[in-house]
Image (cartoon, rainbow, N blue to C red):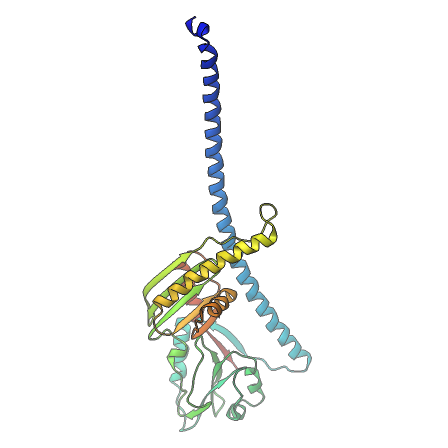
Length: 309
């Protein structure tokens, strides 16, 4: 009765309504926060999947171009092709090297020579392979091993560009340096993507140091929110900040030769802006968290292509 006389009843009723409304808004806020958190997680997963698909597309485009080149060769009457092509992992590469190194010939019966698109084809190669020597013209830098009896004739495209004292060496055995094909000595392998960086320092095939991080970089543009131009500027700035962190890490932690792998665009942009000159660059398909991505990149980089004439 006193509450009604003093007007408290209406106030209490209004207070109860406000408390109910406040509770509804709090629950709505919590639900919205949860949805936003899930959306961020979904977006990050979508970006990782997008990166993986982009790498696969680049790989398929490369394979398609090689098939087109082969088709053009066929239409011009060239029926020459390698009898076998295989990308070997570390175990298979080591086994192949051991077998080639076990071959013994006469004093100058084994030819080891550099070949590929960046090397002039030595006359010695044509002397043992005849017209098949033309098969190496479009290869990446490779080592050709062939004997004077025609029993062995293979090309090896290693991860590290090979170097010989002479363009062609005749000996009683093939002259192959394991450092062209296998992890040897102390070196640094760095994986660079637009949103991920991972670096490992290795002693032979043992990783002795690791450093890695991920950056929040916007994925593909969708309608709403930002204009395309503003979206691209924000994304480009995020990538620039990410690559700046990568440059700092490389400046401080590289030991021995640097092998820079990952997304080609990110690698080239980092090298151009920072002045870093890696011993090797390679495009690899490696996604996931920095540590696991680096392991995949390591396995992908240290592969040797075997081609049998």
